[in-house]
Length: 395
Length: 135
Image (cartoon, rainbow over all chains, first blue to last red; front, side, top):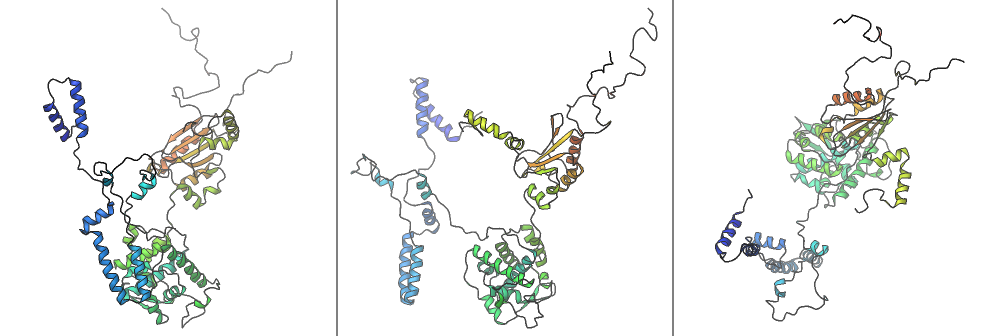
């Protein structure tokens, strides 16, 4: 039985009650269908000049945006008195850019013939606004708040020794911030492309006491601590990642004996240097035992590593990383290839077997014909007859 | 007149002299996304099978959004396909071996399991020999 909506039931009753007995069934039904079309239970909505965001803001804040402009004018006046000329110019420029209010859309109710006695219908389309195009729709669409992702986007294949260096200097920077009493998440905003920042982080020695919860940083040069904390302004994630990669690779290659001219002068010089440059000053695995029980520290380090490597660290790894060694182990393991074909080629076993043929894509009938050598003939004949080679003629 | 040889077709006895494997090609199709292909997507299994059967041409290709299938092509031109959806890797290997060991002939109900080219040892029955029937 068809489910009848409540208001439909009431309409039917109304129509039944008002229908005169003298009308034939056909005329009654026609009248009923006309009345049903006119009836609407939804609330009426009038065209407004406000966009969705503006109306939402008004509703949420309860303020008229125009009053905010008046307030800003006041602030501008005060700033002019207190700031110097250059600072005031920069300040006003910022405000102007932020305050580019969108031009209000015309109120279409004013153009209604019923409201406007001077209204004359247009005879040509000159001067009339066009509605309904793709661009018009695009302009009116509510795109929501602008969002900038913090993840770099590009996944890089990182060598094992590079990964160790990246994790180590990230840990040192995070610990430096933590010990200075600052928000650890600041490391995610900073570019680490400057070679001396890398050098400072890599040359600091880590002393771990107890079960890894108490950590002391000892800097090769005392001024390093201040410079490490005096962090420059944020840049785009792309710049952070590119710069970090270049400098980390240079540092690690130098440690492994490669020579680079660029960074020669900026090598960390230990007081007890025994001929090896850029060696981690502390014992080999001490920094791996650092405890990450402090969740703010853990999240900051993981976020920073995700920014640098471009690899998403899954939630279960985040949950289980109570020590730096566990996190490093998870980062060092290569992610499993998504496709079987990639897995088989990576293992390099079946590629060496002569009777095996691997294919990355679906083998279609055309591929089979091409292999045999028949496809050229088929294609030629189809073209000669004016038939579609693939697909259908009309589609 | 010199003796003329009987004109007859050679009787095929595969395995008496040389043995020719009937299966010439095996196609393994899988889907990267579907879970039913999990048993087939085992690299060591495929590697071992390919190395043990160098006389068979093996192709491994994806067939997206379909169940996994092993398709065998035989010398008589026929093909046999076995769907290995939701099977474990050992079961998939069993099916691959099954297809490898099969000939291309259609599956038939076997009523007489012994086939022989030799004549019957005791002769074909006739009513004139043997026990008498008296009314």
